[in-house]
Amino acid sequence: MSHPAGMYVRKTQRRNRDGSVVRYVQLATNRRIGGTTQAEVLLNLGREDKLDLDSLRRLVDSLNRYLGDGDEDVAAPLGLEGGPLAVQSSRPIGTVWLLDGLWKLLGIDQALAKVLDARQFRTDVERALFALVANRAVAPSSKRAAAEWAGKDAVVPGIEELAEQHAYRAMDLLVDEGTQAAVQEAVFFAAANLLDLEVDLIFFDTTSTYFERDEADDGDGALRRYGHSKDHRKDLPQIVIGLAVTREGIPVRIWTFVPPLLRVP
Image (cartoon, helix red, strand yellow):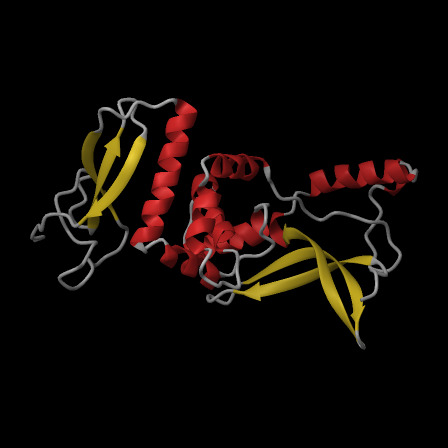
């Protein structure tokens, strides 16, 4: 494999189901592998319509000063051949980096590694699950949108790209009772040690939450169905959440229950 011959800006696009097109900007290079030349992405700069041009100009200004080119070239247009280097976007990392530190401090990564050690996966399931959790904390969205967010809109340590199907598959693993118990136990004992929690008395309470969907689940084992809603939304299906907490209100374990049946007029 040869070394990069030079860098250039590369644009890619994705067409949504509604026909709209989203374009992305990347910093890339060409590598010769065997007898063919292949493009290799060095840096995903983000969506073209969300680029922070002022921040990019400041970065280019800094690079030009480092190279000794002076301020006169800061606003020079970017050429794909021989032009000055220009960054087209930046992605935030601070909040996700902090969450990753907490994730590891609580031992969630190690708990998942132990549970998944005997299974063979082509993707990093632990990183995919962290990306979904980080998305819910920073920019809550659907799993499909979260996958795009993790690969295009934010810097998630250990993830260059997250496919939608990988996000769904990672979530499916948490349905397993053994996986849930192992992760919850690891998080609880880590939190109890870090926060010096007292667990001689545990409180249990229930609440409910509704789903923005028109119909309830079908079948005897349906989880989301109509019931008495604390949010006064008996027109929407919901679930009941059971929560065990310490004296200080720190969660110990969470359960979900089917709400009592309510006939909706």
